[in-house]
Length: 369
Image 1 (cartoon, helix red, strand yellow):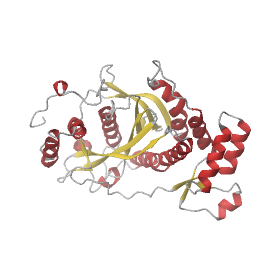
Image 2: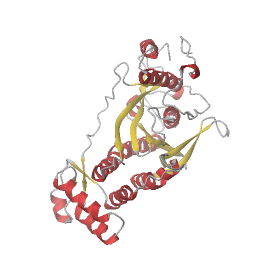
Image 3: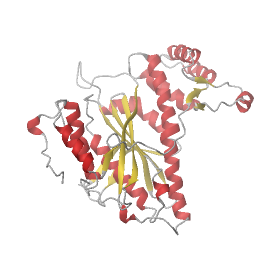
Image 4: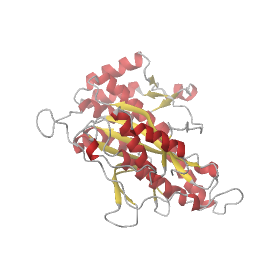
């Protein structure tokens, strides 16, 4: 990797000397990611040039949601109804008329309609969430508490068209018990041959430090799963695989940050590596303002459905087409150009401080080998 990207490693090496701990910490993280052939898109101007459908403004069925909340009599349902009416009146979120004929003839392409059950479930999770300390006063809620009360319904409902999996194992080197990784949550689809393919991976923590304890873990799992997706095709056209994206999310308590990794070929077209687009967007679901929390969760669901799920469908079509068009002719490549990834999974960082003290930092050689 150092020979392929000398300028990239030189920039990272300079950043290691920075007096700003956040900058130096990020550089150490990105150097570690190069073991998995991952390069940060912010270095070397490697922005995502593949055209994507612009994210539309979410739109909800206000009248139906109000009826459901009013009849359910769940805690804070009246407060939720008040906030929904205010959000619609201020045109923050679009409103779909409950009249089917009206929607059929006056469908606005600038909006993305969200299903009532998904939105209702998410709003209920937001309104009823109670961050109960797990170790007494002033302590954080446990990771399992946050998963169950806040995130379980949101993720499971958003990926209902696929297979949502909690605690998914990634077998990096076969069936070894030592060399597997485990994602807190993943969205997958299963082919007719019962082969699972992952397109979304999430890791959780509750410490609220600047650096997530699983930031390298999720990158390693993403690179491994992308290798698996591309290798399943045997031979492939570059324009097919360069359009896929595997999405990653780091959840810290009630805050979620999205990123993605995508394949790219080197200039000589002899090696495939992965570009990491970090901090694409983020959402906080417990701001202290319930109205803002409802807005954020609706926008979160819209992002999951419009962006993440659409890339999931794109990968699914790629896998399906590879089975029907097995004979690749012309300018296509074999799996020989895939990166040779490590066979041992990355482990979570166990930390008690926001930044690693200098005496405990891993020494990095000048050649980064």
